[in-house]
Image (cartoon, rainbow, N blue to C red; front, side, top):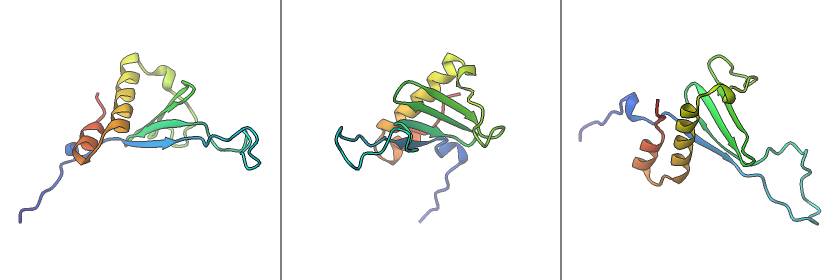
Length: 111
């Protein structure tokens, strides 16, 4: 049986991270306060050198993880519309993909 080795270009470059803020009913005695530390709903992608976050309320964050590993400086507003679009396309592609081959293709970030 032959050995199959993946080249770095064959491996996905981004992974999907999701958090969905739990919805609470109005009179739920166990409902968490809005300031409980539970973040709002978001989807994000993490690449080897960046983090892109899209919040449910439309806010966007981008961090250069090589130069800002503590995520102190949100650089989303400095990205071009094209860069933002490529990151959004990768994020939505990862959200919708099914199966190993689809995940491999969806995990590539367009340059």
